Length: 184
Image (cartoon, rainbow, N blue to C red; front, side):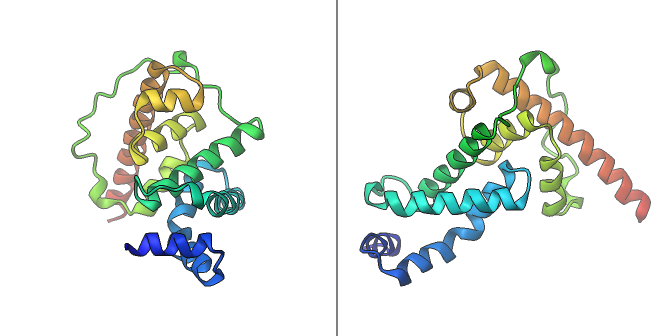
């Protein structure tokens, strides 16, 4: 029996040590995901807490047809999106906002000089609609039709927002690389 399966079964039996172990094993990674969607760390912490309540409540329904972490990640993402909707903060995404296509060669965007922390800060600075689509597509691996369903937008709008996000990130990366080159 796999370690995850043993851990889940112990959590279902409400063994506190197992519940603590599950939390400690995954909390940091799930918090990082919540931070990508929420405006500040306090909101992300609330999403994480709400997510773990849902995780523990629904562990019995987990069937091990995907990795445990992937299942929990989906809960965090859905909880974050619902929190944003609940606050009335779901961005209105309009396809007319951006018609450009991503023209840069994304093979080498100068990322080798940037720290991950700097890059994630750049992602956080994107307009909310772009940031959400970028996170869901590039970082979480959802398809545009799935994102469209999640955000109640069209596939084309999802693709347009992703393209816009990439263009904005390229601009930010280029500016940061110029700043770093001048500093050296």
